[in-house]
Amino acid sequence: MIDEALLEAEEKMEKAVEVAKDNFAGIRTGRVNPGLFNKVTVDYYGAPTPLQQLASFQTPEARTLLVSPFDKSSLAAIEKALRESDLGANPSNDGNVIRVTMPELTEERRKEYIKLARNQGEDAKVAIRNIRRTANHTIDKLVKDGEVGEDEGTRAEKELDGITKKYVDTIDSLLKGKEAELLEV
Image (tube, rainbow, N blue to C red; front, side, top):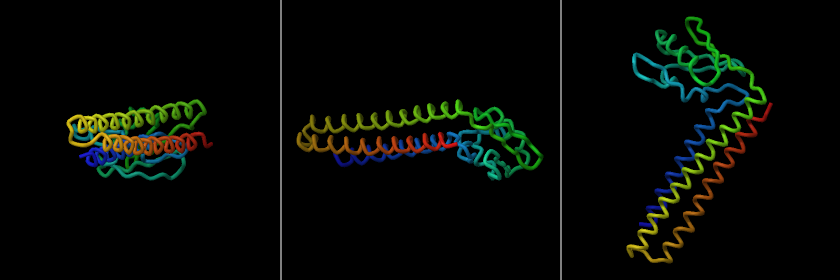
């Protein structure tokens, strides 16, 4: 029973780390990458569709991204979605591809991105701590109901704290790497 609770908590913490990685990938650094457009959805025939499902991406220059739609009739909808996104992108449509030019990163903008990364990192750590709290409640309930001994419950809580520390440290190292990447000029 305790092992199941610990395993479930570890799986959920792993997912929280994956979500944090995806969120960090969506924060722009010096070079434009397709990960920036993960959260962009396009109104494609009345259905909100992720941009990755509608187009392929190429990066000819550091600040330019070429978006090649699989269906040429969706060019206008993709351009509109890119223009309305909060990326500060400036898309231009030449009839076949959309050329997205990102603005130069100023120091002020870099600091905003660092603040955003820290907020997302803190959100991930809060999620991990919530998972730990839920698992602790499960362990406490098992001890209280007499299904496991107190010593086993204490051992499981210590093990859970170790697992939690491991994943919080992972988030911290990811955040440190992202901050270094953002400050790189």
